[in-house]
Image 1 (cartoon, rainbow, N blue to C red):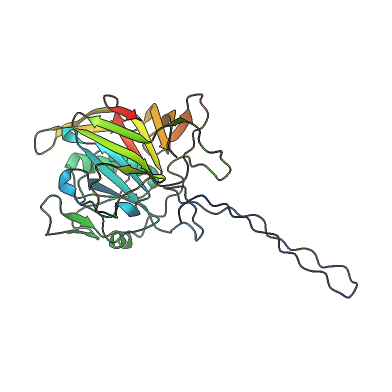
Image 2: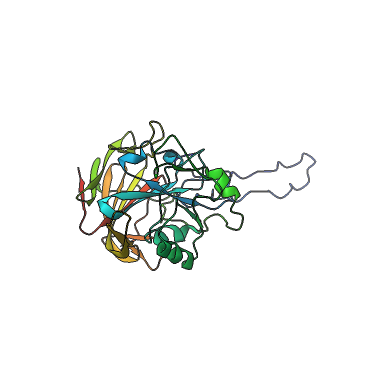
Length: 322
């Protein structure tokens, strides 16, 4: 169920008897807050699913067309990789689609993205030094050959590794659901956001890649969407974090230096929601900490519950809104 729901249980009154005796004490139920999904802040009237989050690395180039499964994600993070391209870290917890992909390799940037979920990172593989760093951070990784990952022979390699999320979750029995919220979610009592109008956004990660968005019918739509039609991720919120990048210390197979996003410390933040733009700042104490957001006055900035796309934009990048 999408949207904000406030649930209040009415008092249950026991009627007095007719015998003239004192009425029985009134029985009542206290108001009970509906639990919320940690990766979207949306209500979970049936409870939070008792399974770990899957954070799946998904290709984001033209060769990935069509991307599958993104419409079932709770949250997506877009990160810079080598060659000025970007890759997605799509998080699945509340809903598990039949297939997700194409699945690609890990980067050290993923440590700060995945650690707050307490979940599993799913990738086609990765450089030995990267996998060692992720293992040292205590993050379990599923790669090709593990449960749920297979090749779709109708697609060209390396863009043909696909994931069956249900099979992957079935193979992970020692991890629980995310314990805390990934973002500071607003509550039903939070006043609606008030910012400058913004119904379009061009988020530039490098000279070779810009992700363009339009506010359409209450959600954001990627104008250059690579997803299967009808399977698009349509977020209610766009959250852009200005981040520092550094050389990860190795080259990809084509000889390109691999960048690493530093998702710790603090920086500028832009929240685009409900057709409005709010300026703020982000902070993150360490890789495992949840993101904190404040407005420019230093007060907490909360994110309306809903699907969210986070763009980790290098300081050399740009964001244009209209």
